[in-house]
Image (cartoon, helix red, strand yellow):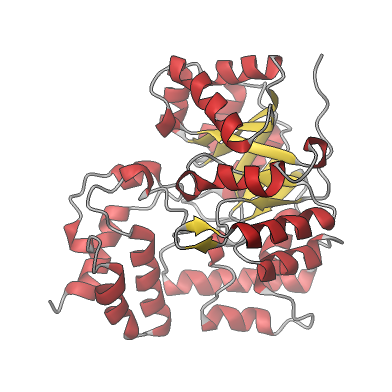
Length: 377
């Protein structure tokens, strides 16, 4: 019998991708307090994946959520990521290792992770979708979906071939809404055409819509309500029809409490707020910043053989562009590249670009970093 879609309490979820860290380990005590605040405020949806925090996210879910709350008190999403299987026979052992890492007998949602045209072909070849559907029939997965990073026509193809998909997780924020490289609006429209509930990731674009450059910040400062920058981004995403859930990857209690303050009694953006975020988008585009979200897919699992801290180098360049901050030169030399690769060490292998959810031309952008920070050396 088909299982009814679960009761997701309110439309806000805890993304366990950017947890507070101490000495390269999850700050368990702070994370427990954040989980308690989240559940105590009436929310119940947690999202993880094996690769998040180099494998530590699933373990943190077990220690901070699963071991402390009855199973019926929370919903848990995990994902099947392409880098962890080479053939069909690898999938079930990997799935079972995820259940063990999280300390659960089933996942409420299990998503085919980071689907794009290339990954979709690999997943089909390995019968990953069919395997997930078999796991659902066994009750080990309650709901089956995908997380998606590609153009709208690719999503249309996937949803046409696999109408069994119950939910689609997409990148969606006000800067990417009409961006032709991300196609957030077009992807959302395809999901709605297929009548699929949508889960939003990257509503604050990896923090870029929180720490705004001065020109963009002025667009929000004129608003009378004086809410946080994150509030406008998260409420923008949550305000669309069919948005089942907006995820936020919170890194401290302050972020948690801020997010909860406007999501407990959610109100979509009003006309004045919508006009303000439109102006922020225009300000961003005028600065020509690199739209990296800091997800770190490009450097995890040895994707960069030269150990170049790609997201950090891009953030360094963005700060120099926005603030004309010459301290970034020192930071580039003394911190970011002192024990890691420089932009000039890039061997153009392209591994990073194959896994970049933003489809960035990383090799070309590293050349820009090299020109900016290494031209005098």
